[in-house]
Image 1: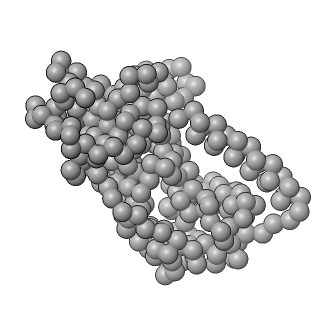
Image 2: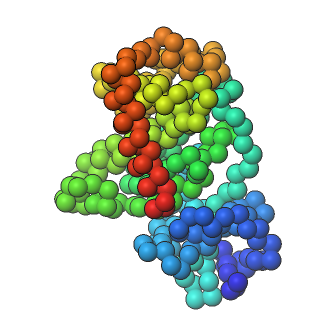
Length: 271
């Protein structure tokens, strides 16, 4: 590997790099002491984070949605990647207290507000980029965009909106990304939730959010999940109280589930 440096000009000892992953299309990931080093792949079809954007992101003090903390530089002074904190450990969320999970979602909401205020757009949000070790971390949202709303909306004038209009549009986008992740964390691959129940729960939550003008899933979950229970027991109690089904609706929702699985598989292969 070529000589590389951090953004303070300190040479990095690549012999100490521990390979972690090259699964994604954008970077090769290494562990380096208490850091993660992400080196850009040369064949990535889109633009990588440039030095200016890395310098913007590293100044945003998020706590759970992890951002680059500095650039990785080559001999030419070019950004060839970035560094981030290394997060280790994993716990089964099912048996964690609902109250603890809610506290983590509150912290993530604070992070979202910081990102929205800085016009940072989240794109690559999924279970594979999430670690729960007592704290809930989004370890690689990836594909960060800054003030490029034209890339996420059909509004051809998005980049010409006022700052407040941009923040409103971005808030909806970023909240939707995190809301989908919250649903996945709570409901996907659970042996106590079948596919029909999953869709009925999503349908129920969407109705309740619309009815109560709720933007962030946490505010809806607080109404229906018992904070005194662990997550598994609280969801089972929730299903027993609120989730009903009939045969006609069941067949309809199975079709929706099939299409959703096809969409998720397509997104996974694309990334």
